[in-house]
Length: 144
Image 1 (spheres, one colour):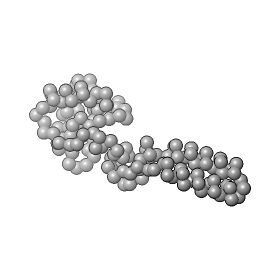
Image 2 (cartoon, one colour; image 1 turned 30 degrees about the vertical axis):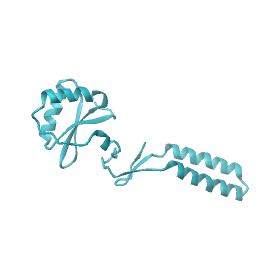
Image 3 (cartoon, helix red, strand yellow; image 1 turned 30 degrees about the horizontal axis):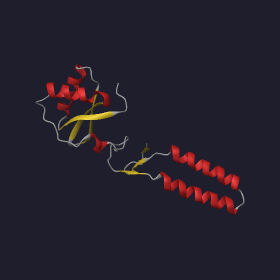
Image 4 (cartoon, one colour; image 1 turned 90 degrees about the horizontal axis):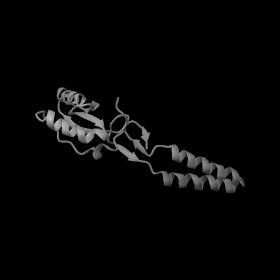
């Protein structure tokens, strides 16, 4: 049904209002998802490509529903995909890689196994590439 690039087009204080908006979008041929990230708001989310059209449908069909004023989607852009927490931190890949490289090369030169140290640096580089760039401090999830 719905892919991964969802944006919030509106939010309501009650689930019934959000489900009414979802039905209006479904009738217009737009897949919509209703979710409730906290107890004060119920969001209606659609694919990024359908957002403008969804806004027009909601303005036309659901103008009387009481919406919640909520920040633009960018405020939620770095929300954790696992738990929707906004308590996320950026991981610093460059500093971590530099520290690993210096440590591995230093040990390799001291032990006279520079070829092994070189492969250790390559392994550290691969690890840094696959490791997540953002980390949720609430649940520990990492993602790019």
